[in-house]
Structure formats: structure tokens, C-alpha cells
Image 1 (cartoon, helix red, strand yellow):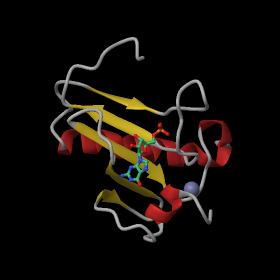
Image 2 (spheres, protein in one colour):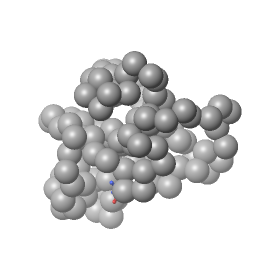
Image 3 (spheres, protein in one colour):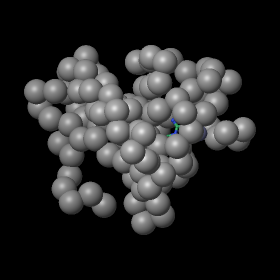
Image 4 (cartoon, rainbow, N blue to C red):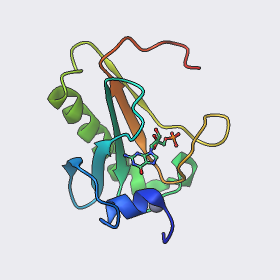
Length: 114
Ligand code: 5GP
Ligand code: ZN
């Protein structure tokens, strides 16, 4: 997608220090972190959000969760706990229309979320 900020990160038009990358997935630190560990994990292909997922994305989403699991260990938040969040649509405050999963940890996270 021409003007999608996360597509630009995924294909290198915007330079980012990736904390994980393979042929289908890239993970990088959030620009405005809301927790000591705040990483975004995204598919490189443009998918506008959770509601745009289809059957063919089943493996991809599973792989994203395994990346989250491994990053949680790498960033030292696996033992104390963490959260994986995918905001979908206006009420959830989704601000970037390219599927992304927030990996949040390093502090006590409130529940229910705001
Ligand atoms: P959403 O609100 O859509 O669930 O999450 C979008 C997230 O992307 C926000 O936490 C925001 O800080 C982050 N973000 C937006 N633009 C950029 C960017 O250019 N680089 C990085 N690293 N994060 C971004
Ligand atoms: Zn995109």
C-alpha cells in the first residue's frame, strides 16, 4: 500500500531498528511506548486489520504469536507477564490501518483496559 506507514516500515522505505524480522513478519519498538516493553509485531503484507483476516492468514497469525512468545522471553517479560493487544476499529482506537499486535510488558497492566 502506497501510503501505509507500516508498509513503509515493512519494505524499508522508513528505516526502523527491527527487533525481529523474517520474510513475512517484522517487529519493532513502538514510537510512543506506553509500557517499558512496547513492541509492534506486524505482517509485512498489507492487511488492514483483524476484520480483514481470512482463512489463508491462519498460519501467519499463529507465527506472529510465536514471535510474540519469543520476544517476551528475549525482553525479559515472560515470567512476570505481558499482554498482546490488537486494536480493531474506532472504539478500540485503532490508529494505523495495517494489522499489528502490541506486545506490552515490564509493568503491572491495568484491567479492564481504558
Ligand atoms: P493502534 O493505536 O493502531 O493500535 O497502534 C498504532 C501504534 O503505532 C501506536 O502505538 C503508535 O505509537 C505506533 N506508531 C505509529 N506510527 C509509528 C511509526 O512510524 N513508528 C513506530 N515505531 N510506531 C508507530
Ligand atoms: Zn500497510
